[in-house]
Amino acid sequence: MIFDTHAHYNDSQFDSDRDELLASMPENGVGLIMNACSNTGEINNIIALCEKYPFMYGAVGVHPEDAVAAEPDYLDTLRRFSFHPKIRAIGEIGLDYYWTTDTKAAQQRILGEQVDLARELKLPVIIHDREAHGDTMRILTEHKVWECGGVFHCYSGSAEMVREITEKLGMYVAFGGSVTFKNAVKPREAAKAVPLDRLLVETDSPYLAPVPFRGKRNSSLYLPRVLDMLSELRGIPADELEAITYENGKRLFSIEAV
Ligand code: NI
Image 1 (cartoon, helix red, strand yellow):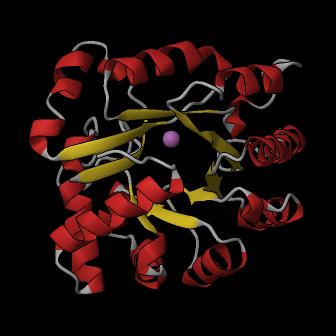
Image 2 (cartoon, helix red, strand yellow):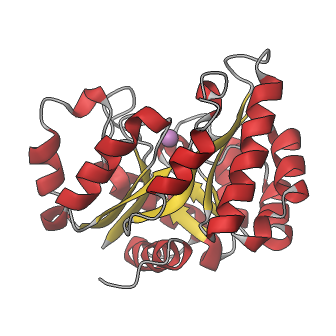
């Protein structure tokens, strides 16, 4: 079975067929899905899907692009919903300097605050790091992320940084459709460097569909393409990687059943 450790099934791109698509997951080999959160306005919808589908778990968090808009009491909101039994992570949180750098201060502040909250709640963090590797590593280190653990989602850093993430920070590294892109030399080098017990797969659906579906709406049903690429890179059969990444995801998010 496949564990898609990062998806956004509340996105409006799924409005026309969300239930039909999600209902088809088990029969297509998708056993678990982590539904990530971008802002506090999404939390009720995330929890509704988690309650409807036994294979779906959720996270609560404020994405760096929503940093400036975060309400003064957003941490209280996250804390309150984090006690729902299917909420298993704080995320996605992090830094994104690709679209804008003039919100750096707000992004850094809410990242540190949310890592502190994750440590308090003993929940792992889901980290979004785009063009901000140095500051992300610095803040995660300053806020002792190893005390709660977590994952770098849709990893885009170097193979050297993989070693720091897995050995010094004790975190997991997740790869999605972008590892299949033609020019993805660096992500593929990084994917080879991750210890097997720290490796995860994800889609970031509806974004980042793998080749040959690039540009289309992504879904967990396309994850075999990512597992095939990792299999080629690692020289390990895809079904073994599927089982390994499934168990890794269960361990990270403390999912006992299935
Ligand atoms: Ni995401």
